Length: 286
Length: 294
Image (cartoon, rainbow over all chains, first blue to last red; front, top):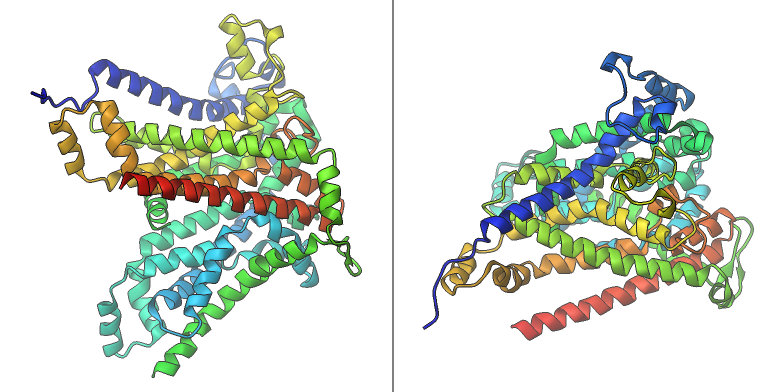
């Protein structure tokens, strides 16, 4: 006779150890960031002290807040902040519209070439960027985009992934709803605006967050297409900072790292739910 | 009516597809073609046949870069995926306290600029007295002199890059696994409980097979991404990470900056072929296993 017990639950000791392991793992994710912020408020001497402390010495108002203004001014981060913000905002807004419209057309309209267009997108999604970026750079050169804002914006005004994602999202909108819209005399665009967009709002939000973060953090492509100091985005400027100072001034470098990191962490914490839901949608559909 | 709609569809698709074709599809095809030419970007390309490939395979940096890229991908991706599965399974359990908190924290490195990640880790790993890791290890009694230069000219450089990549990629995989675990039917677990399965057996024989599509997705996309590894090496070690931590894509970037576009494309094609080969291999392995289990 087989002994029938319900022992799906691990033992208390096991559960306790699993908690310890996962919280320790979470701690390893936080410590480097805590260390970054802590170092950014220290003096140079303190930063390279052989027995470092977690908190900078003295009271908070005595900490080296000047490191931030130094990082901000010596690297003129204000300018680069604006560049990054401008590029990310334009790309996020326009790519969102283009991808959603294309996704809507692919999922809800019947037309010749639909299959071919969809296959093309799937193929493009699998290609590693390494084969395409060289000639994409050449094309940008021909169009006069190199070392211009256009190079950071135009190639990202739509993406295979974005269109695919929007196609998946719009295909969940019931056809009955669209038919009802047509009976009410809506044009295809009005259907998109009044019926599709409200129904796919979570997916749109998720795509917007992905696009924004992707653009804000983009490093490889801007590194290639931007030469002028004026047009550099934040990651480029901060990367350049490390070669200017090198190990000499860790606190200023950490202040710069905090400056580019903190806005994203704040955005992430605010939009956490939309974010995780969006990723979930992508994962399941993919 | 119908033709009117046809017109409309292309009206919506034309611009987005043009962007995708112009900046991704066409350049990919051109990139493969370019690998048979010698070209500096100006003037007309000169056809050289397989000369770029011959030169590449004979070049000093190629083989170490290839080895490191493969090592990186083959170590990073399975560990990230497997670790994420275990973490997600634990986080998904009813008895786990603080699931949202841990999930949120694990996810933070994923959204941070790679430049900032590089800065932070270089500082944590710095061999100077202020470097956090060495100081911590020293305080545990490890001899400072015996500690390696984590990002220096030794195999440690690649090991460090791999560890930081796992650290960075784990949270993303955990979130995806949690989504997949949410879809696993409760009745499977109830049946296992009735049969007296241990937690480990349940994990192995119920949870793991149930999320196979997600594992498949994570392994395939993870490999595609890992074979393109570039920025993390650039920001942590620099372009001259030769030998110990050099990777194909970094080599490609160096050649690109020297305006050797044909030769750089050749390296891109090698990455593309590796990607196709490894994806096909995984595809077959996973499809075979799915058949065997049904």
